[in-house]
Amino acid sequence: MTLLRFGVGLLLGSVAACAVVPHTSPTLVYSTYLGGPMTDDCDGIAVDAVGAMYLACHIYSAEYPDQSFVVIKLAPDGQAIEYNTRVGEGNASFIAVDKDGSAYVGGWTTAPDFPVTQGAFQPSFAGGERDLVVAKLAPNGDVVWSTFLGGAGDDVPAEVALDTAGSVYVVGTTDSANFPVTADAFQTRYQGNRDVFVTKLTASGSAVYSTYLGGSGSEERLAGIALADDGGAFVVGTTRSTDFPLVSPLQATRRGESDAFVAALDPAGKALRFSTYLGGSASEVTRHAAVDGQGSLYVAGRTMSADFPTTPGTLQPTHSGASAVFFVTKLDPSHRTLIYSTFVTDTSQTAKPTDWRAEWGL
Image (cartoon, rainbow, N blue to C red; front, top):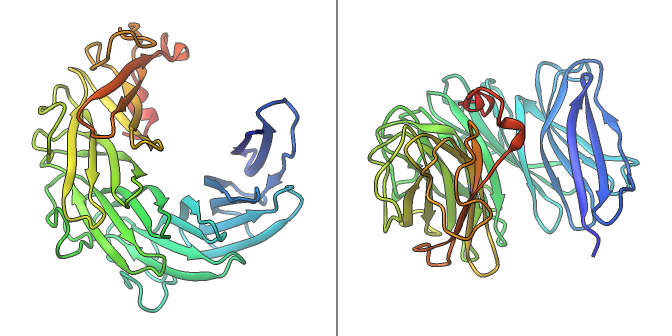
């Protein structure tokens, strides 16, 4: 089997999209610029079953007014743009594509007149620094539905994910006390400083649930999500809260200035199946999670803790002494046992100052 690597970046004011390289050889399939004379950037990328590429972008070039929330679809051979849709004023940051080629896009806007569709989950801009926006585009690029998602504070998207039923999950952080939550959600009240949120919408844009997730401290502006086969959601992130909600935890207390957390929501968003801290006596940060076919959960991030929980016999069970190293942790399908946990040293970081939290926007 040939594996393809897709990339997108910002070069000289234009989006450079995309180098596609077969894993079995160094042959470049295509690489192309996209964009105009101003600074254009694409933060989100997805690929469908036939190799078409979808980009979630924010565009400043003169072809568009203001900063534009744009979705671009490239043909599998990179020779044509199949669609280029401006949804509204804002920043498209994350994207996922279903088996039919519909694209689900998340981002943010400061524009009260961002176009939302009739029957939207949240039809009006709630104020504050910005609101999230979520939109679904048809395979031809037409907007099927779009909605605001936010409160009166600052709402920051982190990731979108799709399940096999076409439901879209949006995770991020908010300091809005009036973020839109559903009545029977797991956590309907804002706990203070900054909380994670998790919102699940159906393929038609209606709400399944929307919930806060956090304690009375601050949950950092990074979070990630992975999905269980039954529609449950694994949420990971970073917390400074000593009272983060826990269920059957592997680690029952916050050990450092900030710890990673791992939590599992049921498909209805009404209860936590599992939740734990994960960290040592210094600081951790994470936004990456994945689930394998057996239900084991993988979490990756960075740590400054020499005593981060690791397991013997792994790649690197002891800290290298670098200012910050990566960690990779695997939990069994019951999420009660560490199958393995290891440090992975980033050798490029060994001589750098401890400014990696700033690099991650924290």
